Every structure is written in C-alpha cells, then in structure tokens.
Length: 102
Image (cartoon, rainbow, N blue to C red; front, side, top):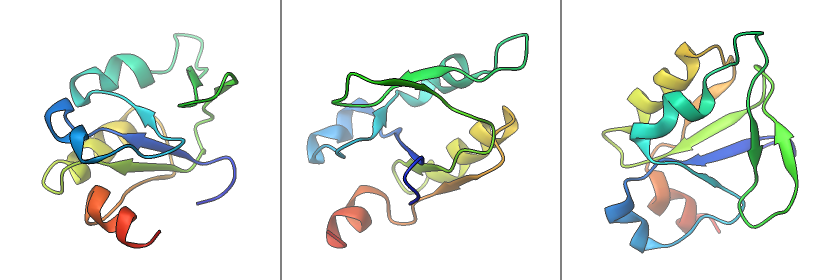
C-alpha cells in the first residue's frame, strides 16, 4: 500500500480477538456509512490513525484497503466506494492473509 493509504479494519468485534492490524482504522461494519460519508459540502471526513495522534482527511482518491471476514469484505468495499471513494479494494483472505505475509 502507498504511504497515504488507509487500511480499514471492518472485522466484527467478535473476531478482532485474532489480533490487531497496526495502523489500521478500526470501524464496526454497521458504522461505516456514518463515519465515512462525505459532508454536505463534498469534503471527506477526517480520521485519527490507529495508535497515532495525527488526524488527516481522507481524499476521495485515497487508497483504502478493507479487511474483514471474507464473506463481508467485498460488500463493505462496495459500500465505501458507493460513498464516493474511487480507490477501494478488499484484502482477499482478510486478516489471516495479511498476517501470513508479515
């Protein structure tokens, strides 16, 4: 992922016990729309990176990688794209796939 990319950990709370994803923005799937929806003026929300004190705006073309349970990840990525984000993908294999590459 590029340096300005955002990883969204959208795993349900009941499976987050598998482990954390350093730097990921943790959001419950049921809260995605409310937390990522652009403002009425068309600007995108500001997020706080996990474990960091910095806040930053997510631009519409920011690379967003969605990690969730395999059956939900494509739907969640599509939900985010439907909000106006143009560079959204899901991580095939989810958390386990990410952990096996590190």
